[in-house]
Each structure stands twice: as structure tokens, then as C-alpha cells.
Image 1 (cartoon, one colour):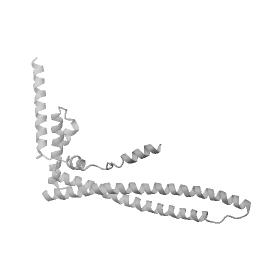
Image 2 (image 1 turned 90 degrees about the vertical axis):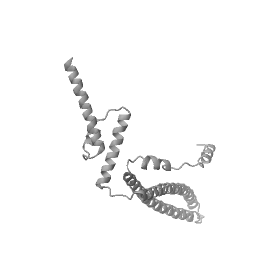
Image 3 (image 1 turned 135 degrees about the vertical axis):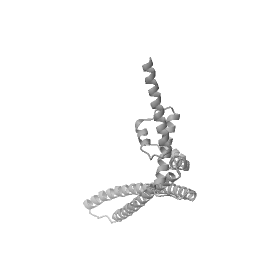
Image 4 (image 1 turned 135 degrees about the horizontal axis):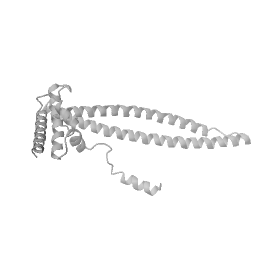
Length: 225
């Protein structure tokens, strides 16, 4: 790769694009797509749990990378001390020591390259940490704003679950109907498994009754013909 290309790439990459979800994505596609207020709160908590685990993992990686860097510094220091050792005046020993010096110089260069790689890895980890913390901060603020409107209920709260599943399955059924797609058997079975007072279950029963009536009319029509 040419140095000119690297220079151009470095210049362009100053216009950095964050390697994370945009606030728009998190607001509308992660939280906003949830059908109920409580499911939006639950989704915030799920996202926060994932970010917390990521942040903890990044901290561990940073500690490990710091140790690698410290070990490389120690190795480089030892090699530099070896380079400073005086050469013997004996020809054979001097030639041997010259080879040792060359070998040590190569090892020093290799350690420097490894050190550069470790420093770059640390920079990437810090960037990941920054992005993850920004996402986590967004979900904390979103949760707090939602909780002010209605406080979170336990995940297994019966009312919250009934509201969630009715809303979610209503979305699925209505979307298929609007798009003129058939309602598949598994979706209908799921709807019919809901509690009897779920509005979408009553709507599904009405749809099935309508389909049944149409089939019976067709059957009678065929018999009359």
C-alpha cells in the first residue's frame, strides 16, 4: 500500500463516523418499535444489560492490554541494555557479538512494532468503550424519561404481559391484512392461545367465523349448481 493512499485515508478518516447505533436508530428502531410503554421500558433494560456486559469486558481487555504493553517495555529495556554491553576485543568473540547485536536490533524493532500494535489495540478499545458508554447513557436517559410517564412494572406482571402480547399480535395481524398477505396458521394459533378478553383474540375469532361462513356459502353454491 502506497504512503500517498494511507495519507489520503488518514485525512478522510478525520471525518469520523461513530461505530455505534445512531441516536435516531436507538430511539425509533430499538425502543420505538416496541408496541407498549412497558415493553419500551423492558427493552431499555435489555439494552443496558448488554452494554454493561460490554463495558465490563472492555475494561478487562484494557487491563490485559496494559499488561502486554508493560511486558513489551520491559523486554525492550532489556534488549537495549544488551546493545550497550561492550564488545570483546577477540576477533571471534567480536564477530559473534556483532551477530548478537544485529539479532538484538531486529528483536528491538520487532518489539517496537508489537508495541505499536498494542497501542493501536488500546485506542480501538477506548473508542469501543466511548461508543458503548454513549449508547448506555442514551438508554439510561430514555428509561428515566419513560419511567416518569409510567413507572416500570415487573416483567411477569400479568396486566403488562397481556397488554404487550395483545398489542404485538394486533400489529402482526393488521399488517398482514393491510399488505393483503395471508395470516399463517402459527400466527393464528398464537392469537387464539391468548386470554379470552384479549381484543385481538375476539377479532381473530370474528375473522375465522367470517372465513367459515364464506366457505359454507361456496359449498352451498356448488351443491345448488
